[in-house]
Length: 210
Image: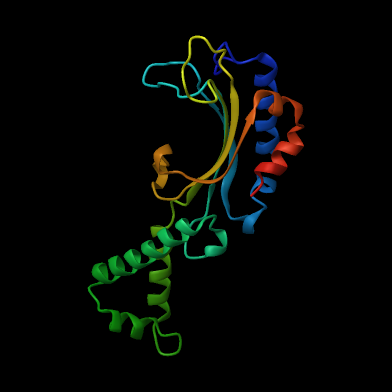
């Protein structure tokens, strides 16, 4: 596989690809189905471990399985407390933006939105505005990759000890760009290569399920 550095054992590359494919085939099991809140299908991408133009790798290669999820006022779809805090802030921003755009006060909003005496068209208008505000969703991902030098210290006299990192993360704060630096960890396991190779992929999936 060309996305791995040549120093990554072939058997490890094959096992990791099979693990990624298993997760991609049933991503719902990894996230415990959580309300079936996905937007579209999951996808499997390579993590490039070799230098290419514009990309300086920090690891030796791997895979990402990702899926866009709902991330809105229904907190049953949230994965972390920080995500809920972020969404609560966005709910407030959405409300203020709507008031500003309609040039109405909060009192006027409450009167128009009232379920008994208010206006159904107005309630629908706000619902659509709110839906558009949260339309980007959040990118849920499971990354798995090989890293060299488990202790992160370079030593010419020491044979590099490689490790396998498997990381589940959620990116809810960066819209459609979903840049890596904004992702929040949900769960992470770190295995030696020997541990990774000795475990079945089913056992590994059980450890990373959240």
